[in-house]
Length: 279
Image 1 (tube, one colour):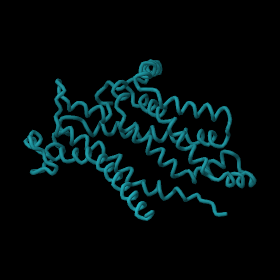
Image 2 (tube, rainbow, N blue to C red; image 1 turned 90 degrees about the vertical axis):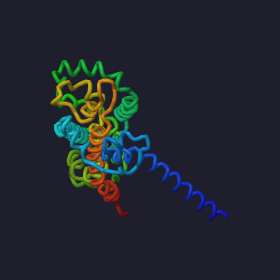
Image 3 (tube, rainbow, N blue to C red; image 1 turned 180 degrees about the vertical axis):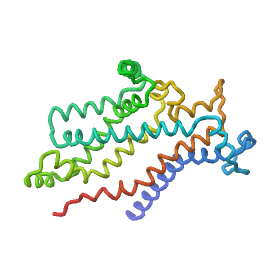
């Protein structure tokens, strides 16, 4: 009876997981289908999953109507710089939070929790005034600074968890051999944190790549606008979307995140046990 109950529970788990995957995959699959449909199929009263007459006209029209390559370059620059800077800053700070329990660690943890509760609209006005004072309005570097500050709390929280998983005995052994704190962090702890650093960088990159609100408010010059902002230009004056080119451009905008995750996912999962200690 227990064996049958276990099999039923496992089948229910698999069914729930399958439903969740379908729920997640449906918008993306429909986006791909729409991107390759000709105009007459987009206006059909009986839409189909698979385009009857696939075409690349939507992609050609999207590139003709909007500067997608320039916008993608801006987004890539902002996302890569924000991810790199956030990881460089967060790694030593996370080490301090994880290894030195005290008021500093408690305050940092509280900052992580509180900062994630702030809505974008609440901080945009003071943020705009600060960046205006620093002459960073309508600047990619100003946007990068915002992305770093916004992703830093969660990056700290992620990396602190990875630091706690590193056996302190390794650091103690290095200290006995005469290594200083900086040397221990760089030569002992950091290599074992590689999966966490990669995962944190991926999170910061995807957050910056997909961000829309800050880029819309802070970047005014068309030549500096990021890809999510440029995608809104496919909407007409009355809010009517140019559906085919919009779907094609949105599909292309999702590819970098998917490719990046596909490339590094083995390193993330495979490196989780790379620093295991044998007793």
